[in-house]
Image 1 (tube, helix red, strand yellow):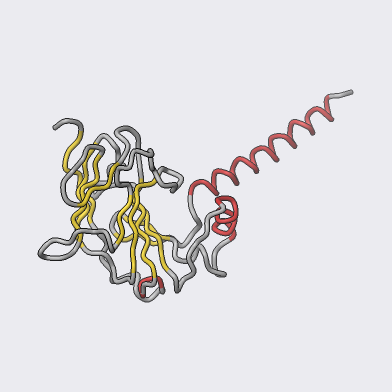
Image 2 (cartoon, helix red, strand yellow):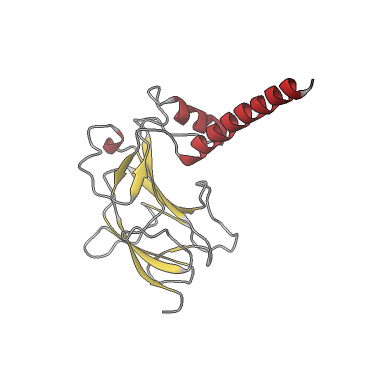
Length: 195
């Protein structure tokens, strides 16, 4: 007597539960389709535009973060080094090269959700185009490590994975025509642990 309603209820629970879980997984996995990859850096230039796909719009609404318009800027994220290994606080990295043309840029250490990793100790977790110390040849040369380093240094937590977020503001590369020919900074692992 209760067999048919019970089976219908189980089917509805599986259908709705599976649909909700798969949608949440898709929203957590990406900012949307249409990402570009330059070296180890990823960006989603259309995530904040009217041309964004439904997943990008939903992700943007769920995260509650203000995104830049196409003419305002573009954020790049790196979660792996040049060797394809995840960025880890147990290792040290050297970020070198040049930043694409922009009026102003920021670079900060973030958790896996893109939030600033600041432990409140006053260690430098962010740099920008005005605070970077340039060498004789120009460009950038930044140490990323949990222990203090000389020159330009970004502090990371001693354990756990992290991301680097480079935001270019007022840049011509935010338009779709300039994204192919730009060169992003290189992230090289220089060691792990006490070695």
